[in-house]
Length: 577
Image 1 (cartoon, one colour):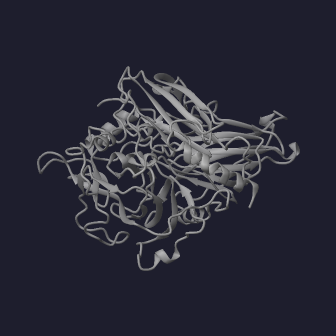
Image 2 (cartoon, helix red, strand yellow):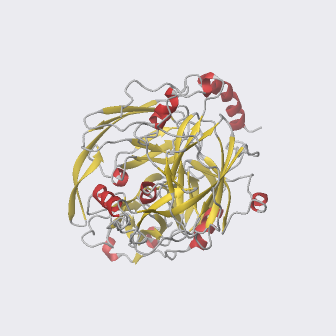
Image 3 (cartoon, helix red, strand yellow):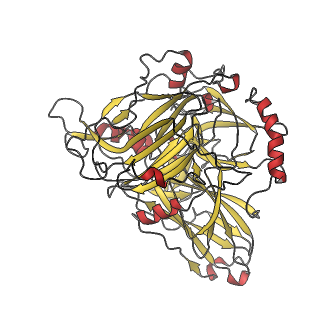
């Protein structure tokens, strides 16, 4: 037995004792304190100045640096007119659902002039996650990295980098995104797309009036760099590449993977990917290399920002950048679904004694979720028109034909107090009520139903969810994010899922562990997880437009019988609706 595995076994008994005190950090761990002041800040991009919501006046916001086992305490103070929550995207929040952050799911939002303290412990995760606002479209500017270092003394399972650098992808809107989404909901049509993509808040030299607003990464010859890629964009999956450099993928969504080399990374909104980049060995080979990203777009033309963001990888010294040759990377075609499928298939967990793959082998609760777009009639009288797919319908989105209505009372509060009547119903369908050819000819009636409906799970049930894309209004990739859990991606494929054939092909040995997965355009993906975290947990598309249209639902996980298996009581400063 390896020394590290023996150490892990000895640590196991200590961990059991600490389960009764989940708010305390592990022995030898630290408590990290932060204050997030949400306030407006004038920011200029593309020669356009807007007062945008920021944290502490920074765009992107400040990074949180912590270690596995540490406790993180963040006081969020709201100094803007909009209601605010912060979601710690990908953090497991074991028994601390009150700190998860989605508005009206785990908490009422923080109102103007009010504050709330988020208090949670990092359990069993290391790598990169991020935080963002979780009210309407405010996360367009309210986001920042979460860097989780391994426990002190534990080595990385890959080459130690000389330096690590967050690379955060975002979108810039010249108009107020809140006005954009409000207009789209009023007209029933698709929202206006962003004016630029950004890397670390900067659009880069390929946009007008933006050459000075370019992120530059200076590297030294022969050194290894860890790039912490984060897709914080609102509505676009992205291809990313660095000219003349190979990237080695080592971690996704704060879980280690078997390293593999690639020239291009595909990263959906809500996902993180850590890659190693080795600088050229000598200064004589140095040049200026563009780092570029552009969308992977499978939806209807005109529904995405078809532009390219660039940053610069430059060698220092020599410093005479203008005299060096400039190289651009080659990126896949906008709709290269074959690359997307191939890249996803290469992701495998380490599945070693130190980092086992605890994928459920049995399934207690199977679900089949058809996800995609749909329609709903224009409001008002029968002759009312709007700007959706037809002049009498508006865009909507659904899971199993249910477009989720957000409540006005937080679901977790209703669950905890036993007062769910009038807030939600526990009858979310486990499969489509009317099956159809999901990736073939759409049904004649594309209207969806509405409701605040949830699935209730017993504690520690093993869950399998097959997520099936639909071709209603066109096949389209959907990055689905599950709060409160990491899940294992055990299978994926094109066309319609076949329960008589596809389960035999599932990977139950080393499937990748994630919190956000792309449902393939015109295909399906299967995930599994144990419902070992009591509370109420949101699952939704991380394309913000689809979430706005209702492509979301919630899981209610009941308490287990033991004290360490029960949701903790709400904090005293929990915001009220």
